[in-house]
Image: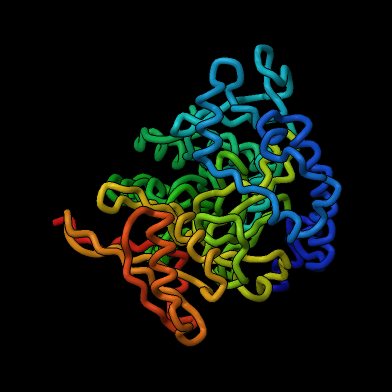
Amino acid sequence: MQEEFIRGGYDALETRAPALREASQLAALPAQVAHAASRTPAFAEILAGVDAASITSRAALASLPVTRKGALLERQNALRVRDAFGGFSAIGWTGQPAVRGARRVFQSPGPIYEPEGAGHDYWRMARAIHAAGFRAGELIHNSFSYHLTPAGSMMETGAHALGCAVFPGGVGNTELQLQAVAELRPQGYIGTPSFLKILVEKAAETGADRSSITKALVSGEAFPPSLRDWLAERGIAGYQCYATADLGLIAYETVARQGLVLDEGVIVEIVRPGTGDPVPDGEVGELVVTTLNPDYPLIRFGTGDLSAILAGECPTGRTAPRIKGWMGRADQTTKVRGMFVHPSQVAEVVRRHPEIARARLVVEGEMADDRMTLHIECDGIPEGLAPRVAGSVRDITKLRAAVTTVARGALPNDGKVIEDKRSYA
């Protein structure tokens, strides 16, 4: 595995010393923060008063506010008529604040609009496509959508950067797509794992020849080991990547199949849900990403997805940090007795009481009989802590909760700050 990787690595960035990568990315931070503040109205407001030149470390980066998708959508809605991107984009077209630079504009559910610039491999997908085994000169059957959302374009531009030809299959039209596979004989597939399964099953049912497809890069959905193994039994080696319409590629799988390696063009933090506070490596939290893309310079963008940093380096020789993959959603907001309770409120309770290491709010009961219990990790049982914490919960949420003290490390490491265990039968 190691020898094969060294012969065919995508570029030298993947194997550089971790300290060199960290120094290079942190060196780029001040200019990116200054660029975001000077070229985008949204970050001019969000980063008001920030000395960009001082953002040279992860600790300094962590002092900046997290911008989550809900805030981005809110700004886009408020400014829709005169700024489709809500002030976050440094590129656009005539009629927008940034009057040039955009090559395409996409719409994701919300709706949220995302720009595409003219840079080479704009979404940085070539690295993930290469890691999945694709090589220059091959034909890729791309079954991601080519309309509205950017997935089709993301993968196609990455494939072209790698030197591959692309058949733009898009979504649906299963029979026509299988006909193209049989006649064009592409070496691999890119798309959602569920549609690849549909194609394979339909080919078995109709006798269509899809044998040329021996590899796949999948994304957009969960890719459980059971489906990975099912495809392998049918001659297809499938790998996954994690990307978003806002940020492009974030992480990708390798032949080691040990987590996902972080892309070279992003700085990733894992923070406690509802906050901007980084958690120790290995602890599950929300993925927060700072992109080094000057066209859409998102600084500390909260993805809303849960993951954790894996210890060590990828056995393939890639030296970038790895994440465990997608582990659920970070926004665990729930409604209790008619009141919304947010992870940020639980975080505020923890901030008020330094004795607490971690906390988890459990909501139980049946409809109209909600009960909240805040489980807190701390050393020993500090005298009077439980009633003080209960008072803070009441002050912050306007709801009453019981408080239970547990030993450090007793709470599950799954990123949950609020656990809803109610029965809705």
